[in-house]
Image 1 (tube, rainbow, N blue to C red):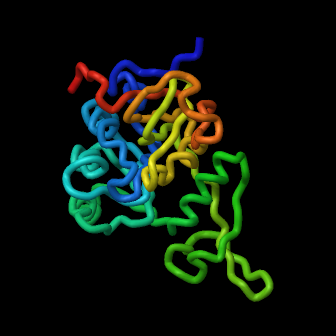
Image 2 (image 1 turned 120 degrees about the vertical axis):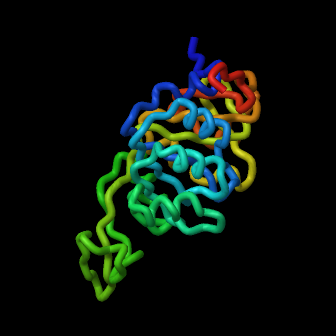
Length: 226
């Protein structure tokens, strides 16, 4: 019987080792898996590469992961979003690396990884510092930059509902990068508001099929390490 339900937040994240590349969903706070991130801080793997839309705000979530000294490199689109003081201070002190990727390019790099595709050319960032060191071509008078698929060892995803097979549905903007990150990671962990019986989520309402999810945990699941 397929059952991907983890009994605790710690059980869901305890496989993440030092040096892992971890994708984290969220457009600001929308779709941010706060409870999974808090459990990851307690688990405390070091030298992580964090792949996300931004570099955290305030003192929770991504910022808490950074403040704990667990992140070696951040790959994101908006490192200087409002309230990103933790990241800014670490970056200025030379304690964390940064790779800035335009948002559309970030999503397409993840989608390419999930679809099993190779590098692709995009006009975004051509002629800017972001394109430095990358292959560039001009085709029919338009400049393009070569970008490579972006994969991760793990993805931390926030969803609305999930079942024991790992099928997920999201609410509104909370979907954010969930479906594409689930495809681009080797091991995807979904934090859900509710675990529902099989068949509760209608087939045409499944936003992420269970084949892309390895673990599901309810956000309020007991965590002995909390």
